[in-house]
Image: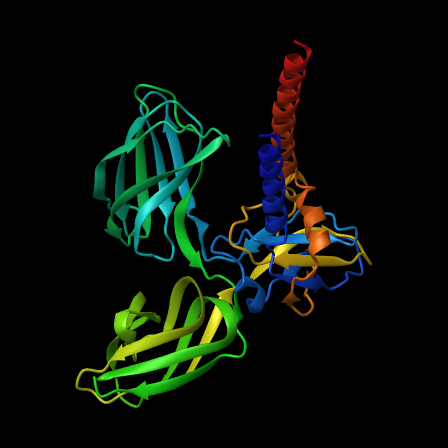
Length: 410
């Protein structure tokens, strides 16, 4: 039994060591000339080797100590903007009403107004009307409800009033104050949400081929020199006449069946419409692959001439605090590593996007075993469970030895 427990403990430690050796690749980080936060740009041949969650990358310094980082991908995002309207007049009659007259000088077509209010637990009814000359007013909405505004983070809250599409130059908002004192209105205007494009990096060394098949389809095969993470494609089409074609983006797969037969199928990742009125930018869900197919349905129309195809990944980098002259190295690519848990307090006051950008050196297979093992056992998430198991095993061994000694003395 004692031998069995020892073997189990040895197997447990061997398992840990094998996991410590699981990072497949490494690359040196270019030396920085000045200490501080830097953005370590991750090229496509690094991002393409990471697992689906991008959790399998670590940064080490010259003493083989793990360096905290924040991984950032410059995703598209929604950006809010607020355009203030001129407040032509503001009248407040105690216990009666507050009347605001606003001017939409550009006569923009709008469906809402936004009010920036001080927090309140009071709700009020209001009426909205519009005018082209600020004299003759026409009803827009007589049943507006301004509910309580309680922002737990800020002392103000933006309240939006929605109404039918209008292009009046003037708007009059009458808020009923018969049951309470007036609201503290700080700003009135029009807020919009706009999509800000993400930042993309070109995937290099891509080639494509076009095959026009007798099945009335065109097959575009985009091939890279290694794994990459495709977040966007731009397809350039040469055409002298308007066109509109349905296309599918995906990958061909195959498997061997019995008796030497091969089952081949096409996995559709995204279906798009290629049109002469479109820019032919195709956004993909971070497709990790060496090659991509674009299959265009021509029906009875002649095949399109594909002039070029480019692939892009979202710009990806590590934000880390680096020391001048200190060597650093990246270790990455494995399947079963969870995201690191760092104390991100030093990163909170840092606004990303204005730190110096540095690159990395050549990527090569990871063959340094002893350093990986040492680094693995510096992780507190591994040390404590391992020590706990060792203590349990030692306790069992001690207990069996004591029982054996008691039997010998009897």
